[in-house]
Image (cartoon, rainbow, N blue to C red):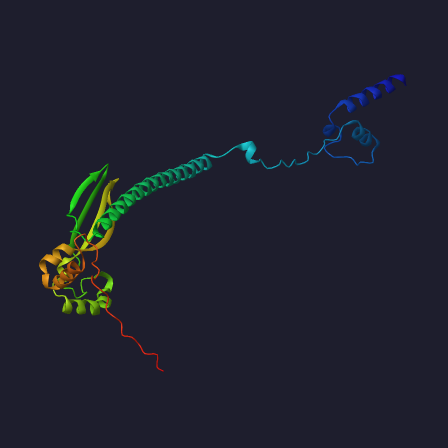
Length: 251
C-alpha cells in the first residue's frame, strides 16, 4: 500500500514537472480549472505597451536647413547692395548740389556786375573767358534779333513782340543791330559729364547807336547840350521878368 502511494506521488511530480503543452496533451484546458487559475495568478501577465506620441520637433531644436541659410545670405547681400547704392547716389547728389550752388553764385555775381556796367549807358563790355578754381566762366554777346520782327524770340514770344517790333523798325530803322543778348555760362566737370549754369540778360549799345545813327540821336543831343551850362547844370533865363498886365477894379 505504501509502495503504491509512493509510485503515484513520483508519477504526479514528474507529470507536473513536464512542459504544459506536453502535459495537457496539446490542448488548452478551460480557465475554470483550479490548476490553470493558480498558474495564471502565479505568472505575471505581459503588459501592453502604449503608443507614445512624441511632440513635433521645433525649429530651435533642429536648427536651420542649408537652403534657409543660403536664402537668408542672398537676401542680406541684396539689402546691403541696395543700401550701398542708395548712400553712394545720395553722396553724389549732395556733391552735385554743392557744386551747382557755387556755380549759381558765380553766375549771379557776374550777372550783377554786367548789369551794373550796362546801366551806365556805356559801350557793352567785350566777350571774355576766365577760369575760377574748377569753374570755367564764359561771357559772350550776340545780336538779340536778326530782323527785329520778333520771329527769332524763343517759345513763341515773337507773336507778342511783333507789333512793337514793327513800330520800332519803322520809326528807328537799324536800331536792332545794337540790341545785344548777353549770356553767362559757368561750366564744370562733375564725374564724367559736364555741367552748366546759364544766365541771360539784354543790353543796348548806346554809344555805338549814337555814332551810327546821328540823325536819330542828334537833335536830342543838341537840345540837351543847349539846355545845359558849362558846369552841366541847366541855365536859368536872365533879365527882368516880363510885366504882367494890370487888371481893372471894374467899378
